Structures are given as structure tokens and as C-alpha cells.
Amino acid sequence: PAWSAFLVDCGSGKVAVYEYRTDREGLPQEMGKTPVKMQVADLLVRQTSEGAGVLAPLWKLLDAKLLDTSSPTDGTPLPPLFVGATAGLREQISLGHLTLDDVASFGDVLVQRYGGGG
Image 1 (cartoon, helix red, strand yellow):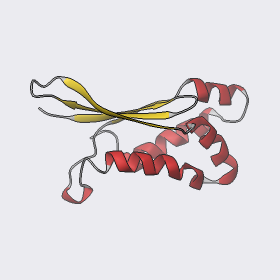
Image 2 (cartoon, helix red, strand yellow; image 1 turned 135 degrees about the vertical axis):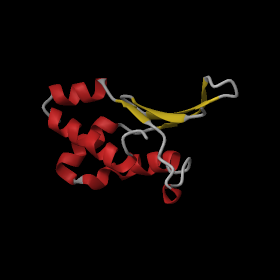
Image 3 (cartoon, one colour; image 1 turned 60 degrees about the vertical axis):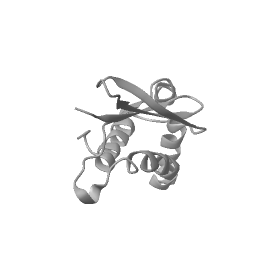
Image 4 (cartoon, helix red, strand yellow; image 1 turned 180 degrees about the vertical axis):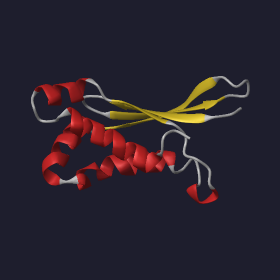
């Protein structure tokens, strides 16, 4: 069966959103990449003092990608979303600017916004 999925690579200097879909033979194929200059770890640090509104640029980016591929009004589930954020988060945790609870809360918000992957 055909499927699509998104991978969000939260690098130290940018975020890249990759879209994958199956081709005619049912094999995964990269359909596109959207790089954006944004540091998710820094946004999460700012969120702890400035509030959830600082994540608006990230939500705008993800909404444009994920919500464009399905229609929640017709019951179509959103495609799976995989998020990788390692080095930047590790650094902010080691500096004491973020806690593991902060990171877990971010994961919870992702699931609330975009579901558990259909």
C-alpha cells in the first residue's frame, strides 16, 4: 500500500523537513527537502522563559508540510512524523538550560498536534 511520512532533522544550525512517499513499485522515495534556518534546541530553551509562543515558527513549518498532505476534516490521519534532535538538545541539557522533562514535554506536544503516526 502507498504511504507517506515526514522526517524532521533538527540540526544545530537548521531544521530540514524531508518528505517520503512510496513510488509505483512501493519503494520509499524522497519527495523533497525543506531546509529552514532555525535551531529547535534554542527555541526550547527560550520556551522555558518566554512561553510556548516561541515555537510558532516550528509549528508553522510543520503545519504547512503535514496538514497540506491530508485533510483532518475527512478523517484522513496525518502521515507519520519522525523527529531527530540530538546534539543540540544534549548540549542544552549538559549546560543545564533544558531538562529531560522539557524534552519529554516537547515530544508530548508533537504527539498532541500531529498524532501518534496514524
